[in-house]
Image 1 (cartoon, one colour):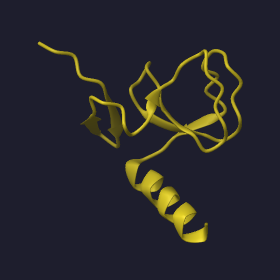
Image 2 (cartoon, rainbow, N blue to C red):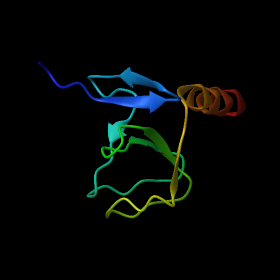
Image 3 (cartoon, helix red, strand yellow):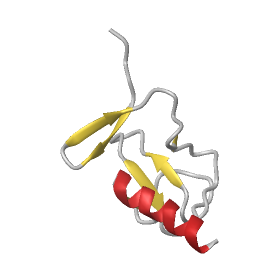
Length: 81
């Protein structure tokens, strides 16, 4: 059986295989406020609320975000650009 990565939205687990939605969090990468990542510990989609220097997952500088909210954020950014 193959292992498939995914993330949760509410009580539903949404699966992805190619990571086009967001990359898995990487301790060797710095992230900017507003960037999306998949937390490998819980498989959920997060958005950074402040800049995150390379290093371990802190948990206080990112929040869980739903797909709907992520789409609304992208739509808003496009409309105001």
